[in-house]
Length: 402
Image (cartoon, rainbow, N blue to C red; front, side, top):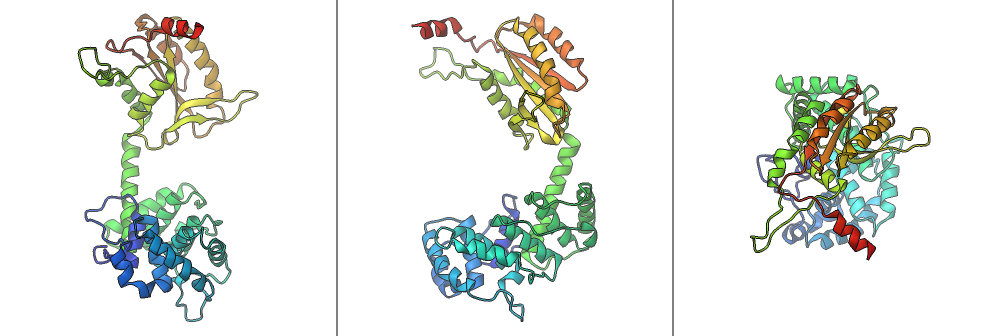
């Protein structure tokens, strides 16, 4: 990748595109969107490789030079569209991974000026004459379809792949494009195992930056996912939420001794949900806010949070008085069935109650009652911190009545 890390290098740009936000131990230097590069390479921009470079540049490196790049695309794409993409000698952009992905990005970038280009490329990518000589090239063709939102036309079979780079390419494709699915979901586990074994045993020597990027992207994703599978579980949600009270020590509600006091009031359930989002989201990257569930009978259900990877829903309640706890028990037990009936992947429920009234005498009764339900994993009840005053609801009601 370092050898290809040069401005406008097509292989380096494809590697940069594959890795996306993955961290690397060097600074990327592939950006072609500078006036100097565009001027020095103006003669390249009429060819498919140059148009592909512009596609990467406009998609990944927008700058003040972008208008120049779009001008070249507007002039160059129609000329490319008039050429036969299935030439006998095979020298065509559809047989070059870097070019076919870059052209897809270019088509998107120039859509307002050349709207017919997207249909033109989609037709090529679905043409019966498109017969990629390698499995990896077929994967890049599918990725190009994904970029321009064209219908998928790729049926992967991991059992037919041996090269770790091909396995890495398929892993990258399956995890990036939801329209591409393995026939058997369990095949993904086997694919990851074979891929890591091949890398560890040195069964591949990537001959290009893009092939190296596929290996790096897949290995990073697999190791991270494996660590998450080993470390993160439903019990960790309860552990994190159980630290709510300790974390609230730093919740700002300054007194009047400061010249400019900062005060973050907590007055309703939505504000508690905001705090819980800040606690959970850095740990669980698939956390869903207000997860809408399937309708059961005449009733529609919506949980406050969902964590699909754990099959867990989180219900949040805000108690203003001691009597609310009895009400919450009835509501949660009633909603329990609707939440966990035919709502894959959700099979468990955690409950978090913020107690504004500090009615600690009710906590144990409610917690024990709810934990008798077999699929409620935890019930966390946190009292309002003493430095945050209870909302003055009587003043609010007086103001509304005036």
